[in-house]
Length: 161
Image 1: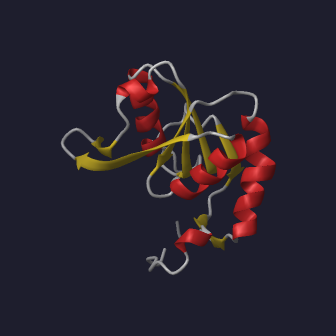
Image 2 (image 1 turned 60 degrees about the vertical axis):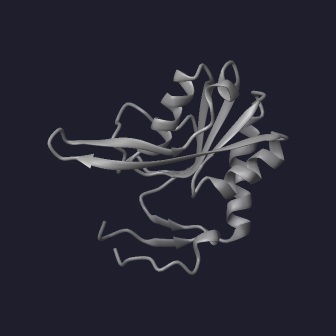
């Protein structure tokens, strides 16, 4: 990641990514539920829900713990909606970025197991870093290799790349 550029987005940049690039493509399906993946999906999830008129907004929190013996990262869900809220529902899953793909795919699988019909959307897709060559988010606003810093992240202490 030594040649990665830090890109600082403004609120207008994010609004444009959502309003111009994502929402027009998402309007073909009526979503009953939106799941925002914490923490990065909360702000874009709220913005997308507002523009699409989705009233039921839920949160999923997932972390990963390495299992070096089996070369795996195991998902651990700290927070996830009950199956009854997802069964038979068209569910829009929102995160800010698809980096390795683990978070979005883990939440997608849990929604499917609950009987929901998931659609995933992220602001930025990073296929170069994805652990899944054959999978991608259903929708994304932009593809990049750069380090994106969203306006809600300004002020955090980021480590040097």
